[in-house]
Length: 148
Image (cartoon, rainbow, N blue to C red; front, side, top):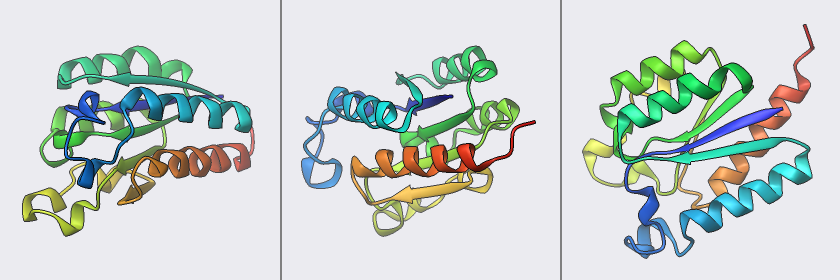
């Protein structure tokens, strides 16, 4: 079972960005923790980060045929990434949306997610652990689904 983990704009700066909001861990550290958890769960994760919406879409289109689910932190694209939304819908895969901070208790504009309506779940405010929670949740759901 393969899960795609997609990180949007500016997440490559984790560990350098405002640590009081985004935490201390770098993206590389988060990806390593995800791969370790994936191994324990018996699944494969493929991680990808880009600051460009088109690159994220290309990745989804190239990888979704061989994956069973998507975990995504769309970054600022959360609020206006309609072409990213279309690519997620077109993948026909279950999606879990993750945000390190609680987007509902920050600036008003951060509270609107164009991804949330198609996501099976949204995990906010749990820091890097939100990715682990998303992986555990998605893996559990996928393993519980009857095979066709």
